[in-house]
Image (tube, rainbow, N blue to C red; front, top):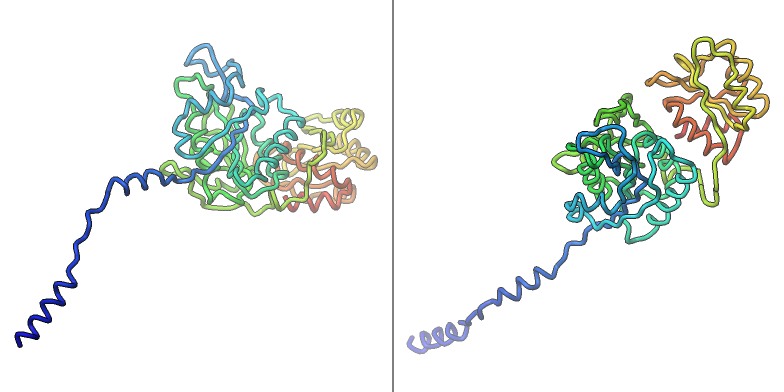
Length: 365
């Protein structure tokens, strides 16, 4: 018995060991050395009100658009660097009322170049609001990546007492850095709303909530500073499109002719005379055409100029109507407003001038 007890005691003593004190300073040092990788977002600046400067902080009109450089905009919102590693690049410094196809092509080619890199996760474009929806739709059709591309603007200059630009830029970078924003087409981030490029419209000349998608709704919202999506666009965009702008120096001329009481077709004739390859007719109602304008549009179509029936009405589709218009080869714009129908027709004309094929393109995008 004594021998058994002695054996147990010996075994227990052999199993006892002492834990050495843990060096917590070494653990803390290791933790500090572990860095969370932030997304890399490029900011491409084009000017606009978001970079505008006024004589006083209460001046909301008559300011100089595009006066501030991209780095000044980024420095005004240091919180951006907590969201992503941001690099700024100035593409243009203009009011967007003076946007050109040359700048569009420069911007789109630069975006495609950047997004082809593995170390670039998203793009933000600062832009004036006057033609923001047009630039957004153009990029939606020609960018060749599923990485987020976000356009942002402001309705008040950067010097205003309640400028909306800083929070819009912060939201735009947050959106471009978010993995859930991939493969959603080009987006617009303003006033805590996320709009899709195809359906967005500028709806008010002055208010900060000017950008809306009245028929089909927002893609999502910013909730607690983070993007929350509730829908997707069903029309093809970005990687899914058939358009290639490599090597293009310009786009075919397409004019918009606005219908009105006592319209007489003279503007159609002027468009033809000045070399238009396509005409968007912004008609009344469901793309209706004044009786005195019809002959000019028929004549244009016979010359091989593509005619697209759109509507000056803000909402609702332009669909098939008179059989004579269909026989003449007039294309209908669907839910695209005249300015976006113009962009799609310009790109379509780089591929074909066949009205049937262009009708397919309008039904697709």
